[in-house]
Length: 90
Image 1 (cartoon, one colour):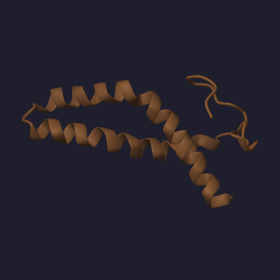
Image 2 (cartoon, helix red, strand yellow):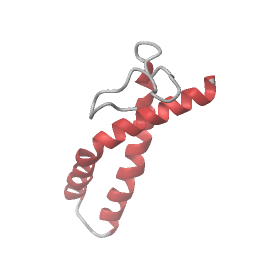
Image 3 (cartoon, one colour):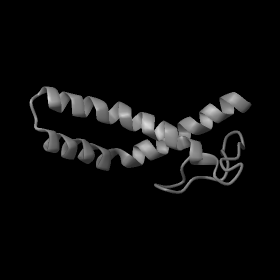
C-alpha cells in the first residue's frame, strides 16, 4: 500500500483497487488513529501511574512513546480505514 514512508501507491498492485477514490478520503482514518493511540498510550500511562511515577514524567514518557510510534499509527490507521470502507461499500 505504501510506496515509501509517506507516499502511497495510487492503486493496489494486486487487485487494482484505487487508494484515492476522492479528495479527503482518508479523513475518516483520524478516528482509527485516535483508537490506536489510545490502545498504545493508555496502558503505558496507567502502568507508569500504578508504578508510582509522578504525573508529569508519566505524561512525558507517554508522549515519547507517541513520538516513536506516530508513523506506524499513521500508516495502520489508513490501512484500517481502507479495509473498513471496503467492507461497508464492497
